[in-house]
Length: 206
Image (cartoon, rainbow, N blue to C red; front, side, top):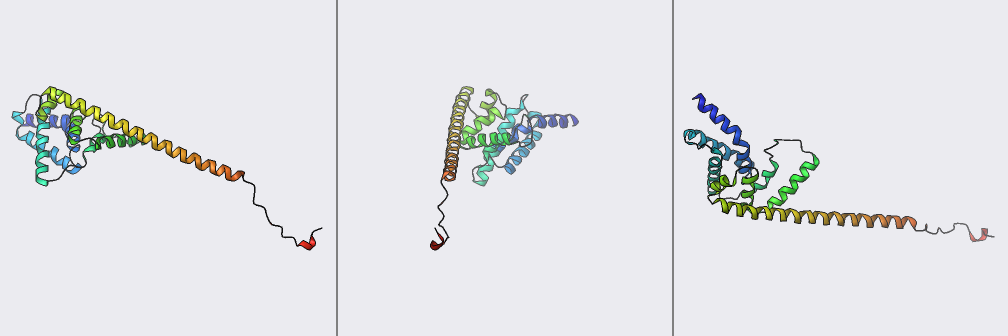
């Protein structure tokens, strides 16, 4: 029994972060936690039947749990883009300004992808699955997975580039507006002061 407990503990430590990131990419934080909990519950019950490489199997279970959640609730997962904010390789870090800005940039780009495209990127990047493992999770061939992943990456890069161009255009417009305002202030300072009317009575003038 202790051997099973130790084996399950190791299984949990090795896969919980990647599973949570994957579930979070397709559901809300609360539901993602439920997906992870139910996935490991199934893994505990079937511990003796787990394959030698359990990660693809775990992702397959998580995928089915998510599908079951959606059928039961009849609602779409609207918070899937938050996977990029969960950095499984470095853990939780202080929210430095540049780090937050980069996360916002990635989140915005992911939000403009389709759900299928986000899932492909999450399985590859955050799930850390090989093409063969990810194809088993999705139920397709390795070649089909690679083709879809290539298209998803191209789409992601194009969205990022478009958002960068839009941000640069907005920054340029803001600087131009600021420059016009400063020029206006400088011009107003160069204007001669208004002519003051004399308050001396005419009879006092020479």
